[in-house]
Picture (cartoon, rainbow, N blue to C red):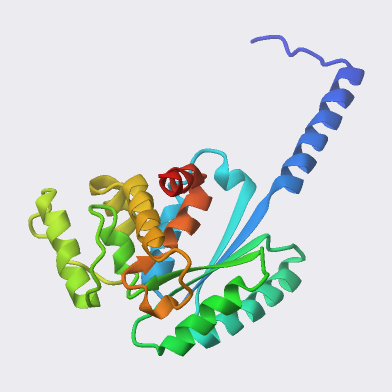
Length: 239
């Protein structure tokens, strides 16, 4: 049996101090993200799956709390603010960034615009990943750039066609699927989706009537931040 080596006491104390300092520094660098979604299943399921694929080290310095709120656009923003306050009190920690995820769907233009303006009004720690018209646009952009406004049902048909052309002959879109992120990662391209969404955003640059920006999505900004892929957006904006 190998002889156990006795570590000198002064070396052990130095190691303990170093390890304690390292843990404290890591803790101080941790960022806490709160993602509040309008949908109760579709968007939360996507982001929950996304967490498992974040680059090595990201999950060590970021915590995520994903909530499906099930409210319309205006009340969702108000509820998200309350959720953040409650969560900070419960956990005794600061939420560094809150993202609110919602679609235009059938909400009025005034409600949709108001929700976006409320999120982005001088709040560097709050942002919104809105989509006009439906979250499925983000899925579609993993395969192609698309700048024609269509219905949610049409997006579902196109998504099915994208996967079927990739070899999933019997694929049928399931709205609340827990596998969507994995499927898109396998058969589509996350980086292409970010590029395509950034190019869609450029079309409406300088416009503030978000309800008329169809199709358009800001989901790419949230995903790029989580994966540290903001460079792709900067590259597209520079073109």
